[in-house]
Image 1 (tube, rainbow, N blue to C red):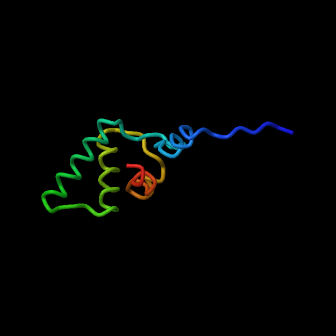
Image 2 (image 1 turned 120 degrees about the vertical axis):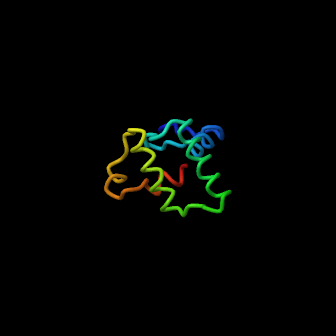
Length: 87
């Protein structure tokens, strides 16, 4: 009979909190922070962006910084929903 191992609580937690899950990060942590600050500032000035607008902004930001983006971003002209949920 094979011996099965269970994940420890720490391993389960780290798997749940991991941000990558097979995705390649488009932005560096500093670039994500800059994008976050911009979105918060826009919201504070009563110019909050909807989710599709924020995804389009992320795509434009990636293009402006010559980032490699997934083909789906190019086809749709905006970042994917998966990126937005992980952002």
